[in-house]
Amino acid sequence: MIFFQDTTHFTQHNFVRLLASIVYHRDWLTANLHRNHPLFNTRIWTSGIIDRLAPMVLSGSGRNPVSLLTATGIPPHILLANEIAKVDKKVETMRGDLMAKLNSLPEEVKATTLENVQINGVLPITHNQVVAMISDLRQTLLNTIQQQNDMHLEQQQASGGPSADSATTAGFRSWLWKGRFHPVPQDFQFPTDNMSNIWHLWWAGRSIERIAPYRKLEPYDLDKKCMRNRFIKAHQVMNFIISKSGTSVSNLASSSSEQKIHFLQEAYSNIFTEWYWRCKC
Image 1 (cartoon, rainbow, N blue to C red):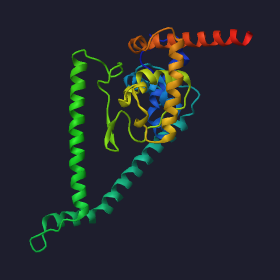
Image 2 (image 1 turned 90 degrees about the horizontal axis):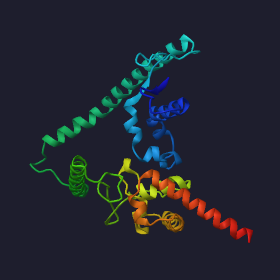
Image 3 (image 1 turned 135 degrees about the horizontal axis):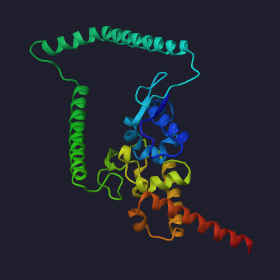
């Protein structure tokens, strides 16, 4: 039984329940669906609105004390079985944690002993330890840079500066791989999705993951050749649609999400009209 606490802004109750179910099961969806599933490219997911809606979701086993909504047609033994399953799950989790702790105890004793006991006054340093120290230093520097970027973003947002989904690069992350910084991680995959989702990602990016608008990518920002080919084809398609939208790139970049959808629909209309008269001739 899952629903929103406040439905005054919605007119379709079925839509409200569907949206509430998606928000409630967001962790399950993330864990069980492929990371490149089309659901994760939709605006409701990339904009981060799901996290903002999460506190509004109310759930309950049979009845919710706040909304007073009651589920009907569910036999009592089903609810009892659900509670027993929860207890079994907690017991199994505790058992797993206990076994893991017992299994790691010898290694912890060994590590503590080696840290506090020296052989002939000197502990040998291996090549792997040197590499690990350098790697830790590099990661510490990267984390420091990232923390500074985060602080700068928070200061901008507190002062009413540009938001994470604006057309600028403020607030977006960078990933270091193959010797240079990129606006996407090395394992990033350019989507093969419906035009509406790609159009949104092209202008807004994935604010929930702090990935910049896809139009700011360059072919060398994609590690795999097939991903570069996808991006190049998408770039050509986007340029064609923009040319038929009746507006400019700068105007599109500064427009609202609703206006961008309007321009996309305008481009569709112009393209279909042009093709219709061409075929008719």
